Amino acid sequence: MDNDLHEAIADRLRETIPDPVLEAIGPEGFQEALTRVCSAMETRVGERLSEGLSDAELEEFSDLADSVADEEVTAWLQLHRPDYEDVIMDVIVELIDEVALQLTRAFVTYSAGTDQEPRTPDDGSQDH
Image (cartoon, rainbow, N blue to C red):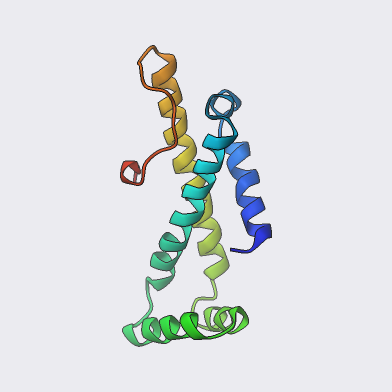
């Protein structure tokens, strides 16, 4: 993942998670949340970009993604999915909002007196 994109995701995540939650999870919890967003992003972006493509286009894209430079993949996406940048941004915002909501819910539950500390959500606890 491009370093600028990684930093933009981190900034957006930091802005989205309420300050009391950020303080409660600390830097380690924030890094776990950021890692979760970034790793889930690749899968979800792939799923969204594949919507509306034919089987032949999917195979062509898969072959390209495995064997050529990023510039060629980008050129292919511009031709076959001209909205690919919007799709990527939509997925990033969606994932950040999901993780922030999950962390906030955990924080509220913890603050209400349960014995469970706030933590980053596990892969199996996504809200869709």
